[in-house]
Image 1: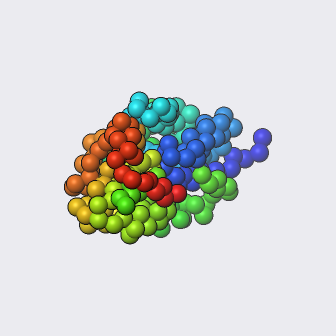
Image 2 (image 1 turned 120 degrees about the vertical axis):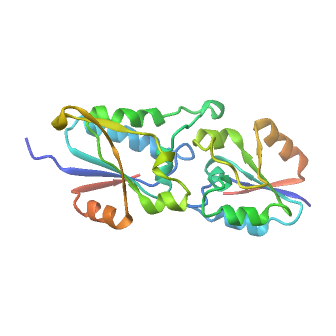
Image 3 (image 1 turned 30 degrees about the vertical axis):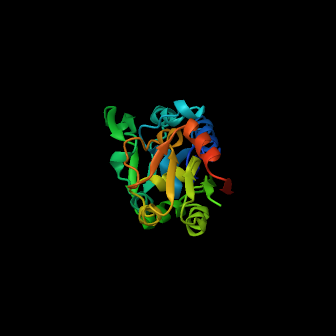
Length: 135
Length: 102
């Protein structure tokens, strides 16, 4: 089997107003089946996808935010959130869902999946990827 | 003629909010729906622009869309009024015309 490639999913759209966020999540979950090195980046309005306490009962749309909590079980453990985008929107890491994964190399210790990174750091991580998919 | 300006795009992604704010004359209304509800949050960099307009113009936010996006705990910009779908219908009936900023 060929070596795993580094895939980054770049998420820049808010949920519900368009279908991009949901479509991205579906492709991410599919990609998990192919044992690639997958990371997710949340930039601009994309960070709104991870906001906690989404309640869609009154808009007649499915609340898919719970699915992000399952990513850890599919070994998708690198969710990069851009610090500058958070600040522009008056949000902090406490505004986001507390997403975790169990680290098999560290006695299954529960660790946070979300890493807050600067634009500059994220640009560096993006440069290391083989493939970047934009949503 | 009092217009209800309806905005449905995130202010971070499109400039439709800015245009609506600039075009809204005294006595008119602005209703924020769908992704435009982010502009009603008291915490974003657009809060001051919305606040500056409140008073001469009545600003409303569609609460079901605000709640859906996880903003339920975030206070809206001072003076912005939350409405439900019934309130949306009332506003459309109350103003003479509506203008959707796509």
